[in-house]
Amino acid sequence: MRRIATALASAVLASVAITAPAPSAAAAPPAACSGTRTPSSFRACVATAATVYTALWAPQLVGRGASATAPRISIFTDVPVNPCFDATLGDVAVASFWCDLNSTVYVSAPASPYWTREYARAARQQGVLASDARRVHRTQKRLLKGHPNQGAATEFAHELGHWVQYASGQDDYYFVKGQGTSRMADRYRSSFELSADCMAGWVQGRAAVTGTWRDTPFIRWAGLATLAELGGDLSDMKPNFVFPKETEIIAHGGPNARLTMYRRGFALGSTGAEGIDGCAAVAAHFTGTVAPPRSEPPR
Ligand SMILES: [Zn+2]
Image (cartoon, rainbow, N blue to C red; front, side):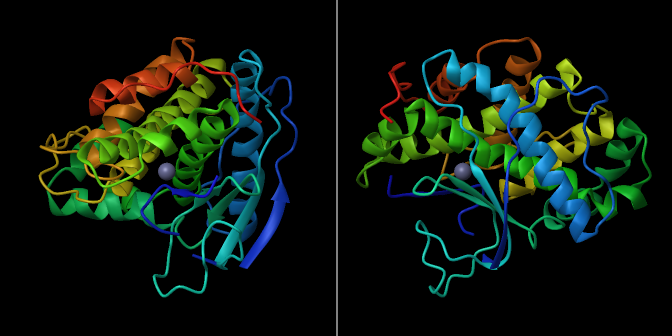
């Protein structure tokens, strides 16, 4: 299709292309992303997340007759040349994005330290960080360092949701419904993004409960912190990732909307519920739209 889907509103740069390994059957010890900040640890984190997450989605896609061929993964540090996004435009982008035209998830290395760290800073400013630290058994100082690799894995999980929407044929529905400038078209575009947040939660909840990804309060904190930060406005936060309900869902949605979708997806995944139609239905209900019909994938 002719659209770019990002976790934020925008995206940035050069790329080291890696190909996600084919889904493997079972991982003995739970996978995890290192807390170190080296480029190699970042690449390893993304590759591991790609392996684990695509393996969890594969049965869902195959079960509905869709291809589960894993997307390509390209890590970038500078605006990448790609068929979906004009890297020469002045609006410098920083976030990861999915490009359907070459079935590639572009993963932003520069963005990775940002999500969890900036959430922690905002939480400190608003007096919430101490509560977070007690809950996840870390010091405030440790939380302020963030968990860039796990944050990147969560951002990646959202982009992988767009791959799932593409592979399942859902994205064509959202594209048609999202045309124009009407309020309802806006809602469909939001529903498309919020369903991807739900899918990020689904795959991480599924990974946690199946033991394919390490599950600790700190790792869950990093996932929630990432989605909150991606939501933009972190004002008026309360302990345990509670944010004011938006009066109107705009674009990707604010922290309340995004975390609500992520948590509902996490619950679906951790209980073994279906994730593709399930997340579409959750997002449709939240946005007052109609979920895409379960259709045969067109490709
Ligand atoms: Zn997105």
